[in-house]
Image (cartoon, rainbow, N blue to C red; front, side):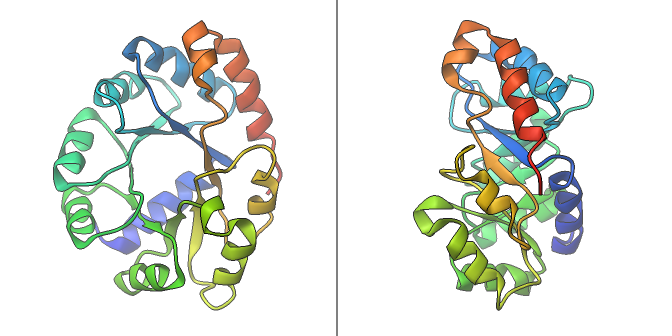
Length: 213
């Protein structure tokens, strides 16, 4: 898969909803009902971070849910890429970008949303052909004003900002010309998952899915 193909694929995914849930799953039993709740609420694109021992099993379960598109986040090594593809991930997300990760995703035909935090990083990815990138960590790197400033000289790149994005500031990001969607964890709070309050998560998803952009 070429970087251009990966960018086209991820741009289409980013346009499906204004928010991509960033999910940290500790109990694999939560995976399927969580995916069903988020999809029912209008958020079909799901990023499962590889931060817990059950993350790959969670991807396998979520991949069975109709209407959902499940990807793997926190890809750090080529081994992560291989495991994610084997689990059924349809896209990948990395906090940054290294040649090893980019090479591995391209070889595995896994569309990667690579992370960039600076203009130089965004330019380096653009040189390789990645026109859709993740801006991370968004709030720690200056938030929406910083991303707007980066967009002025580099309008070719579109972003999915993640990291510190919430209902309080998501509108600031979505109003930017160079933002396709945002990644956020607030739509699937741990306390609601532990309580099995899937209706509560449906409600949060509907609120996020209705955001203007």
